[in-house]
Length: 305
Image (cartoon, rainbow, N blue to C red; front, side):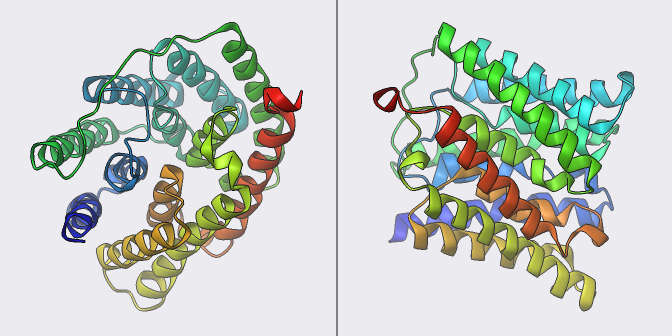
């Protein structure tokens, strides 16, 4: 119980540092929701959620973050097209990375979806990721978390084929969602979730309803806290994020579904335009449901083929 309290305190600490700095400096570009996802996968999950090591996490987060800002700055075109391009590039980097660290996808997709051009985003991604990794070392040294062993992952032909199918599906869905004004149905953490759900070995496939419910409730918790605490009562965003994070911890523990994208989707409402907060949870529910259904039907288990 004491160890769990330390873990939860670290997750909350990272969120407070991120949102507090953004609010204090009046720089929303500091908010990098995927950091919460990394905290969930590295701290809260019973086992380290990905096959990777700490240095690769930092390297590939930064490569993708630079690529995302680069697309915004130098690639013209509608958002759906640039988001699809970002996802395609992320898939290539992901498969060549020798890891299963899918959150790197969000690092490239987020600036594209939100139109981020500021170098503040890059600095924030580096600093916050470093904080997470340092805290993970502390947890290892304290024997609260097991040491992470890593063997590079080799992408097979099937992995590239699956990636091509995912890219085609993301193109169609992002085109429809963004043109309908439902851009958060393809929110970056959902693209991460789709990549992870479509793996035939994904544990999320064994409890799809529970996973979608956990994701939706975490998104709802974030949106509700932003709406009531910030929009309605004009209280600090940091307070809203803190309460939402506690809610997210309770939800994931209650469902026993430690889905990293749920953490990011809980914090993303702190960053999006005020007008988008109301229907944000509905968009997340639709996107999460659609991506889960596609994962289970298009990427069938080999035994079922």
